[in-house]
Amino acid sequence: MVVALLLCIAGGALLALLWMPSRTGPDRADVAGGPAPLPAQARVALPAAPPATPGPIARKEPARAPEGDADPTPDLKSYVARGDNPSMAEVIERLHQRGIHSGLGAFSPPGTSPPLVGLAVPEDFVLPKGYVRHHQATDDGQAIEAVLMFAPDFQMLDTAGKPVAMPKNGIVPPEQAPPGLPIRRIVIPAANEPAPTRR
Image 1 (tube, one colour):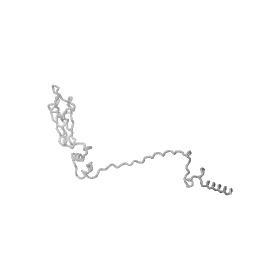
Image 2: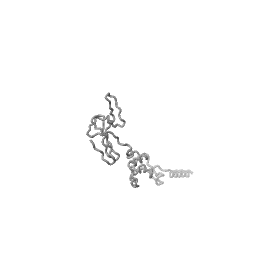
Image 3: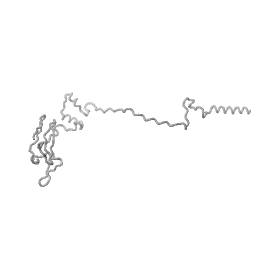
Image 4: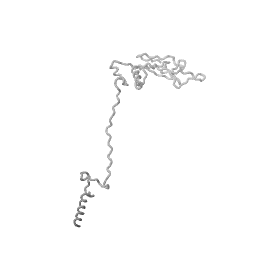
């Protein structure tokens, strides 16, 4: 009876040993085919992965203007190709109608700002303080002889030292011309005519 009891105890202990995982034996991950985890003391922190190098930056296509009348920049070549050869005044007017005021649109249409007309100033005439030469050109690019104007910050005084009324456009009238200046009005050259050169 005692022998049978000892055999039962020994058999139970043997079964318990077979079913319990050993600390030095393979882990469950080894049985399943995976790597066994390392003890905490043997674990080493791996270096952080280097940041990924950025790839090529995709360029955005520039926004294209819609076709047709909505195009904000009229193409002069297309006008010429259609036989619609506009004048510079028409081109600037079309730009202004479309709300464009840069490039050619920054200019006023030819003829809208006529040249100032006043006394001609010979190139060799020495102007006293308070007077300046104002150079101009026609719409087709011809130079106009210099016109006499008051300097912007100049105020003429009478003999009593009181301010004299000055013209708003700055053009010097003949009665306020400096002494010795020959009184002659400038001549605006006609289209495609050379500007007069007088002294």
